[in-house]
Length: 292
Ligand code: SF4
Image (cartoon, rainbow, N blue to C red; front, side, top):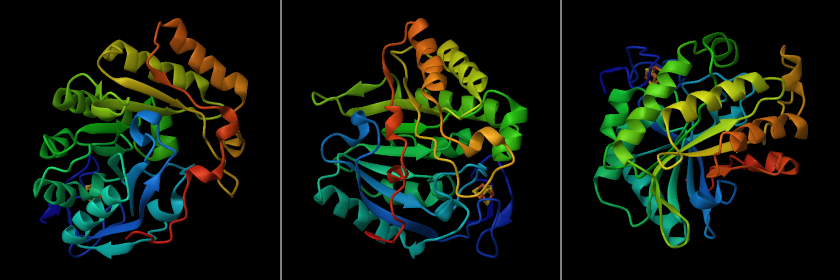
């Protein structure tokens, strides 16, 4: 790898010599691989998603739900060959798909792993949405399903909560590129997503206007035949106090209903919603290097 500009941070550093904003050098690091049942039903199905949790992240969300591995750098080094073996082990265990979590800063190595052979299950690129379109093009034909976040509608909020003021525009351009590659979403006879884009939005307590504005952007850009939407209620406050008071509590039912009601008012039916009572830490598995 030369100087890294895989993501919009464009650090332009040689990752063999040091680390960029994502905190990771040239080698692949992952903290867990296993069947994960907490993704949307069209991703997890009955067998579970064959999830690989990568170490490091190109965002700095103050409320990160996986901070142990995103900023804490907990992980084990693996080769591209080992990553391919992990895919096969997950498929052998019954995985409905290969679910690559926070893959952005390893996109080149992941492309290498996927290019070797076509896997018998869909490959899901599960990312924060802060992606560079040129890097996404590297994955064309290798990724079947994109599962990006769309977190913020406004630069000031994206700056204060994720240190990425250009997030709204960059993530929207990324979603358009993802859709260009996959086309309209399709499922198999069991309702499992075979190709397409499923955009996620985590509703943050106290930031409901942001959620409504994100929905406006997504629904103005894509029809429901084009991309699927998932509105998530699972926000879990971090174990330390944040300066943003509302982020130190869970989402209320009233807040979540305002967002989902808005989508229904817009006539959207193909949306995934969550029970509020399901907002538990269990969405975050143990990062104990199992399966790695
Ligand atoms: S992948 Fe990491 S090193 Fe490369 S540009 Fe992004 S943040 Fe910087």
